[in-house]
Image (cartoon, rainbow, N blue to C red; front, top):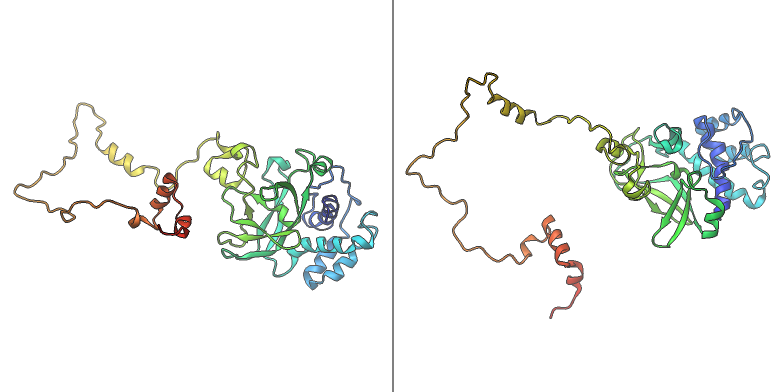
Length: 326
């Protein structure tokens, strides 16, 4: 799909599926988007019926009419594109989807009213959430100027370092929120789409998150409001009051220190003394006496310290192993 077509079809699909399911209007690419109906209660039974019978044909036949589809998209040439994109959103209601789009009242950029993606089943590390997909459309500089409005509809634009261009990113996966310690990542798929790969185990009810970039929310994500930044007092939470330390909190250290202090200054409390060494006792060395060998690095291969040595010396073991012996 072309960028403008993707914008129009995505606005339609979210209006027919996500907004009806959540009960409020979510973000739209068209900043002048107007709902065709004030009440969408007649569309809720379509979703309820789909959850029961899992028939996309019955659901799409209910959507494909002039009451739901705007005139510029109600054409034979757009019918398959519209159907496929609506099915991407209806995919969260399949019994095997493993995710669901739910309300989110966390982020100030969305005026505290937005959406998030939660897991509805257990996902193991390295698993692929196939139905949680996004559509990618490359943007030219002209299309950026025509479509995007900074701070209003640029929420789903990524920059491809490989292709060196901006990309529009829409679909169910666009509702995945950023987290600096995300549990998933985007992976390219075929035909201009991408799905989600699990980085660590996810339990039912956990939010599915992805890492956008290191500077998506300002330099070094200084304005980031993700859950990890809140826990670690980083990003937008950096200057807020530090949380109380948990289990350890230096209790044992403070206790030992205070036990040697007397409330009455006139009384002196004896400090513990180190035991005296016994005479005529010779301590044996822990290691046999021998001259230290020169460390050539072979013994450190495979250890974390080796990586530090490699970086400081500029040594690449992969390249070195491929070079012919002299």
